[in-house]
Amino acid sequence: MKLESIIRETLLLDETVEISDLSGPGVLPGWDSLGHVAIISAIENTYGIAFELDEVMSIENVENLKNMLIKKGVSDF
Image (tube, rainbow, N blue to C red):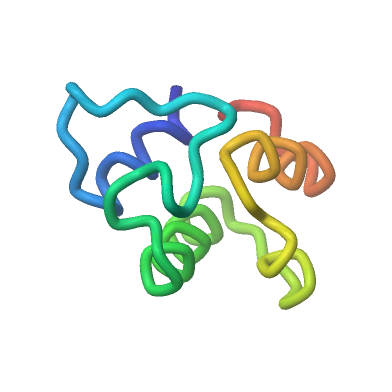
């Protein structure tokens, strides 16, 4: 899964850290406000898309990220 790899690489997580749809700030190490911005930036660069500020603020977990990517026309995550 490309999205999981982006999150793992951005937050410097090793393979022992489980990433699920419910993973987000407070669940994954490093997913704080700065980590959130870094994840969003990495996703925008990888998929060639841009998020609006309100979209960024509404993302609370991996499932929200997936839904946002679908809205942006991305399906290979």
